[in-house]
Length: 220
Image 1 (cartoon, rainbow, N blue to C red):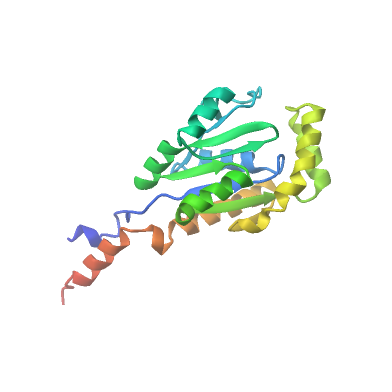
Image 2: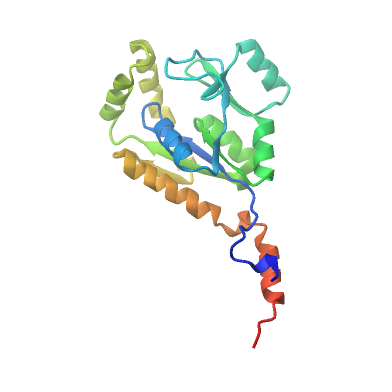
């Protein structure tokens, strides 16, 4: 049998970059963690950051925590695919692991803000699938930040003040979801990923499949 036409073999494709953004407390990190646990084809793009580690975070799993001097060295040497300053701290995406993953057909998940998403769109727009998560109300957003109990009142106030400017960028995303119910929002993101993996322009192996299909001589 011509292996190019076997329906049991996966068709080679280029990896996608799933970008999930939201104002702090709207649910992007929870959705991202659930998606990673449920979907073994996805790997987290671990960002570098200069902010302090939260009690619930594990170094080099949730973030690579670095000094500002080290961050500046990476930024200035073009070792970061994107970077941004958020709430007084710096965040960035290491370039090498992302470019390797894309070429090998592996999908990467990015839990980043609108500034980082914009830079990724500018540099690798064909690979990016962007999703923006909105809270149902601003009152609920404030409640979620308090329930998280990981930031001081001053930090929470800063995040709420910045959320309006972040929400203004919703038009720049491919998909926009309202996270009123976490399970529903997660199901929607999961459906987006499944559909985007089937896009014709990502599946370069389809050329060989179609060629083999047309060359196949059926038995009469």
